[in-house]
Image (tube, rainbow, N blue to C red; front, top):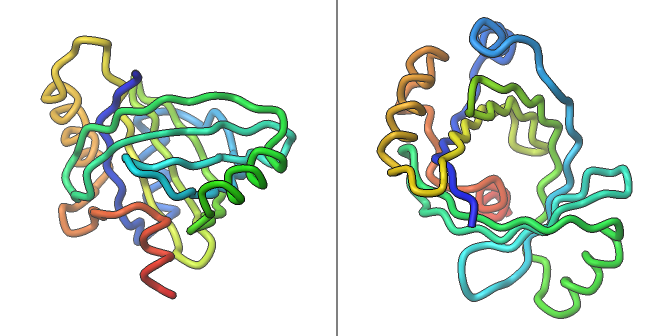
Length: 171
């Protein structure tokens, strides 16, 4: 199972944040359009991430709802039939949320930096520090905290819950 240390934060000034990210990571390596469908499950979360190009990933993950840098464990499986898989999973498990976003992906060493524009929510920054198989989570937390300082992410900007939960709370 893959693991990383993650944070999500509100982005108050997209232009300034993008400039700070680019100083550390260079230009974005990709602009991704993502349509995430969340399904009912008994452990963690299950989402289908549709890239809009005939490709998608089914991702099962566990992460606590906490604002500080936290451990996320996940598995991913690729599919070339996003619509069929979404329909099947919706029928079997129910789809409780859809999150549509444009993500600019940056790489700073082993850390994936996402500058997200989420429909109905606004702008956010995510950090994902990829951990080695037996690496202690504390190493990744320290790296995430260092990057937060460099990018001007304040503790008050951190989000405890996922985009799907934020959208569900707005309903």
